[in-house]
Amino acid sequence: MILGWDQTKPPDVPNRIDIDVTGCSAVSLRLYEPLEGAITTKFKVQWSSRSDFSNVVGEREISEWCSFHGCMGAVCNLNELIQGRRYFFRACAGNVKGWGPYKLSVPNCVVPSSWRDVEGRDNRFAGKQRNLDELFNAVRLARPDDASEIALDGGQQQKRATKKKTTIKQLFSAASKFQKNLKRGIYLACVLYHEDKLLLTNEDFVPVIEIDETFTSNLHTDFYWLMKVACTWDDVKLLRMDMERNASSAIHFRTKLLSAACQMQSSLSITDLGQLFYRPLRDVHGTVVLSCVNCIKSPKAVSVLNSRWIQLNKIHKKLALSTEDSSINEILMNSIQEQINYHQVSNIRLSRGLYVGYLKMQSSVDVIQVVVPVKAPNVLPHCKIRDNPHVSAEEWELIKQHKPSSILEFRPKNQGPTEVQLHFLEMLTKAVHNLFQYMDIPVDVAIAHRLYDVEVIELNADVSFLIICPPAESSCAVPGQKESLLQRGDLFSMPIQAFEMIHLKTYQSSIIQKYSRLSCILELDTMLANHLHREAFSSSELQKAKDRLAKLQELSGGLNTIWKGVRWLMDVIGYARDRANMPELNMKQILDYKTTYFGKLPKNGSGDKKKGGS
Image (cartoon, rainbow, N blue to C red; front, side, top):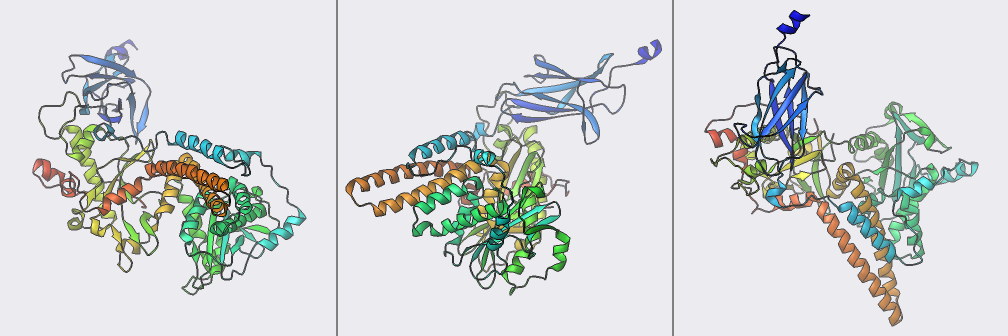
C-alpha cells in the first residue's frame, strides 16, 4: 500500500478546456479529464486579466463530474465576472497527490458581454407579462356595468368548474348537434385522440357541429380571431353572452362561432377543445370546416354516450384516397393523421443552442405564408450552430464589422479578428453551408443572400436564431411562380398569423395566452361600443359613447404596441423586402471565411449539425 502511494503521481494536463460566454457577466468552462496518466478526481480553474497570469483574480475547485458524449469531465460556471473585461483562463487536474500542470482554455481569453451591448436593444419579451397584466386590469375597469365579469386568470374558471355527469338527456342532445352529412356551409370539428385511438361518434365520424349556412368573404380575419379564442377556451361562454346581449351585424358570424364552440364543449363535457388546425378545410362546393385538435390524457375525461374510441389504423383502412372532387367528409377524415401529426410536433421546443434559420415567403391574393419544416412547424427551416445560445459583443462585432466598442476592455492591439471571433465564424460558416445544402440552394445563388444583422432573435433563454434572408426580389414567391421548395414533402407553407401563434405558444406561452385573451375582449368591447355609438340618440348618450370609444382605442393602441414588440418575424420580413438592406458581413465572406481572413480556399465538409425538419 505504501509502495502504491509512493508511485502515485498528480494527473497530466486536462485533455481539453472549452469556454463559452453565456451571459453579460458569465462564462462556462468544460473540462475534459486527461487521456493518460494518473487518475483525476478534481479540477482547478484560475482566471486572470493578464495573459501571463501574474495577477490571478479568481480560482475555483470542481469535484462534481459529468459526461460529454462519452468523455468524462466537469463543468465550471462563473456568473460574477465584470462585464466587458477580458479574462484569461487556465485549468489543471488533481488528485490526492496534488495538482498537475496547467493548460490554457480554448479560446485562451473571452470577454463576458452580450450583443445587446453593441446594439443597445432591450429583450423583446422582458416585462411584457407585467405590461399585459396592467393593461388587463385597465380593460376590466373600463368595461360597462352590464358586461360579464372576467377573472384575471382565465384558468381559475376551469378549476372552479365541476365535471358534468353524463345523463340520458345528453345522449339525445349531443346526437342532435353532431353532423354527419355536411352540406354547403361552415362547420366546427373537434379531433380528440388518445395514444393511437381517435374519438368518433356512432356514425364513425369526428364530432362536427354546424356554425352557419353561410360565412363572410373575410373568413381569414375571423379564422385568426378564432385562433386567439383557442388560447382562452375558458372565456367562450362569457364572450358569447356579451355578444348576444348586444347583437349587431358586425359580430353576427363571430357569435355563431362562439355558439358552436359552446355546443362542442357542452356535448363533449370538456372546456379545452385544443389547438386550431392552421388552415380551414374546403371542398369544391365551398363547404368549410374549422378543426380543433387535442390530445386527451385519459379517455374518461370525455363524457359522450354516443361515441367510442377507435384505433387509428382501423380508420385508415376504411378511408379512400382524396381527390380534387372529394367531399368535405372525405377531406376531413383523410386529414386526421395530418392534423394529429401537426398537433404533436407544433409544441416541441428545439434543444438548447444557437441556430441559423432561413426565411422564405409565399404570397397569394389574401394571405402571406412562410415556409416551415413539416417536423418543426413552429420555427423556420434551420441548422444548429452550437449548444450555447448566447452571442457575445465580441462575436456580434464581427457580424457588424464594427471597430472595437468601448465596452470591450483590454482589446488586443491588432485590429484583425480575435480567436473568439474566428471560432464563431467557423461554426457559423459550417452551419450556413449545411443550411444552404438542406434548402437545395447552389453556392452561386447563396452568395446573394443576406444575414439579418439587426438583432439576435432570442426565442427564450435557451434558444436563439440568426436569420438568413434571400435577395429582396426572391424573398417571396408570388402566385403562378413555381417554387421548388414547396414541392418537397419535408417543407410546407403556413399563414404568418398561424405561425406566430404556434411559435409563441411554444416559446412564450404565457405572453401569447394573455395577449390572445385580452385581444378577444378588447375587440368585442370595441365592436359593442361602436354599435352603441351608432344607436346613441341624446347628446349625453353620444358623448358617453365617444368617451368610451376613445378609452378603448387608447387601450387597443397599448395592446398593439406590446404585440408589435414581440412580433420579430414581421421585422425580419420588413428587412428582407427592402433592397437597401445589405449587411456589413456579406454572405460571400461567411461562406469563404478562410479566403477572407487567411487567403486560403475553405475545405469542403458537410459537418454533423442537425437540420430543421430532418
